[in-house]
Image (cartoon, rainbow, N blue to C red; front, side, top):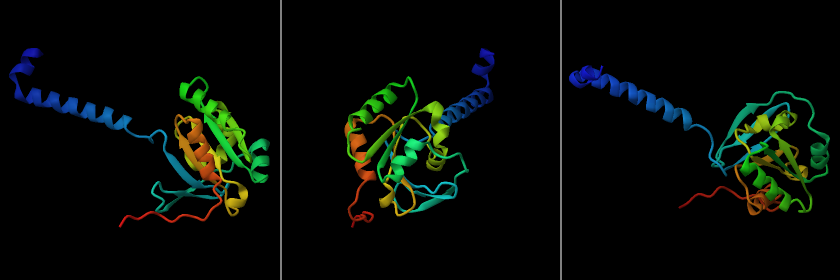
Length: 188
């Protein structure tokens, strides 16, 4: 076999082509997914259509959410009470999940914020939110805007990956911002 490879240019080219295809498949197969620490903004309307704001804030992509069982009482009570709900989805045993859970606990005393930690095995209880947001990795911090600020259409900000107390606080502050709406930034 080795002699055939050393003597035949066609065999060498074939081997290089096969190796290139294998490397391309491995490289492209692993490159999908979203980056850690990124944020996505979404408008949710359970049981109907969802408008997803593009990361640049330029457009919306329609999606549908399957009808699911009602959200847990703690979540709906907090949302109906016009609080910002900080829903943290974690995988038990992950080090970044552990530290993000601690970071959420550090800002749990913020007024009008209800922190809820959801283990991965219970995510289905929040399917009307997580499916609409397209949650793709854990930990995921979902900050729901207060009901009065969302003009009747539930809205959320999602932050993926490890979070510090400062980044959790900032995500919650962004979700509960009550000032004038800011337009898109256009250089020039």
